[in-house]
Image (cartoon, rainbow, N blue to C red; front, side, top):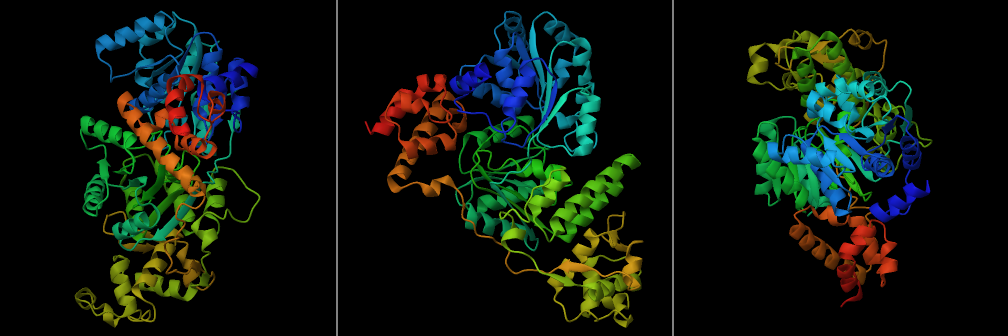
Length: 599
């Protein structure tokens, strides 16, 4: 691998390969097909970018999003790699110019949307040139059961049919066992070598709190742990996105919104603002995020429950791509469970799809209600096991919950559901259990039934937690009419008859785990080094603005940290710093030396 290592150092500025990168690159460069599963921030792009520079011809990279392509190409231009995009963002004249340069061997990599790639015009065009490889990025988009499904991805098997001698690499950071099988089957990768890296992101701290007032809880979290940091806040609805972004702005934070209901121009503007600016919070639906390569996102927060662990993993994975400490925080309540179950039931999808969606939601609920390490539970979902009893960096490990035998209380709750006719939601049921003589209780004469007041010894918050957990356990299920009414299930029979005990998590008053960026490399900087760090950041921001690119495209925070810590005094020493390749040394070396020497 001498050639690959040389490219890694001279072009990309990294001293050594990480994880399975070397194995993937060697296999692909020698002409083999492969499927690569590697976590966000794990260096997937290098797995095809380096072979693209090693092999004859141009590498065709299939990417689902315009933003993803443009970000990759911008970063490649900064290090002197010949790359281009071909998508709907180009005018007809610009597209023709790219095609002409492609025929003239002017590119090492060409990023293209699947819709354009599948046209007869494009397939005929690339049939006229040598092709180094095909890279299919975000390969999980092939799965019909996933939240990022792209119909065009199913047709990408045509690449092997039309160009059987060209090696292919499919890459994703999100795929359970079923999705992996689907990728292999639909893309015709039956004999491809599969590389599976650990899905663990040890720098991310996972925390899930009981939802009371989610906005206030979010603000407390940001103020306590991430003042001035860049972050992403996910909401389920467009309305909630806009309301939350506006509310955060009123609290003095720099927040913007993103959802599919906005005009394409406004979405692009806000996305570009998020990528280029620091100390900014993006409030968005899941329409935002795939392909966002911003390394300094310090937190990802969820104000609503994600539909699956795949979605949760991918969304939280947008935090801490630079390897420094980051937080994944979520507020979760009974309403989330009821809403998502109802969405599945009301869906016009086929029965099989509903079954898959329900199974994925059950796994997500299990992660939320677990009393053991969240990281271990999530990794096991992806078929990965780690030899430890806990990760030491999730809320369960840092603040272990107590478990109590709640069988009697669960029986009371389910009896109340039965006695009131299985047509009421948790709010009314709690009023009956606690003996609250509300107008509705009196109207339905529920003050006369046997379950009235039998739960008066427990506060409303505890009863809400009980109902949330027994719904998550499948002992109660919301109706499909959209009214939030709870029904007994077949599983509830054994509990009501006393044949099965139910243990639940005890509610804790401690919701915030104050880490204050524990493990952040910046904390280790001495005062003089911190001053140097600020000077480097200021120079980077100015340079990025002049070049019209995001700051991280110039240098990642990790590179600036290493510069501040080591303070190299010669160009040779500067070239040894991670992230500084030959092109960047040539472009920025003189400016960096001025700052580092104090000239």
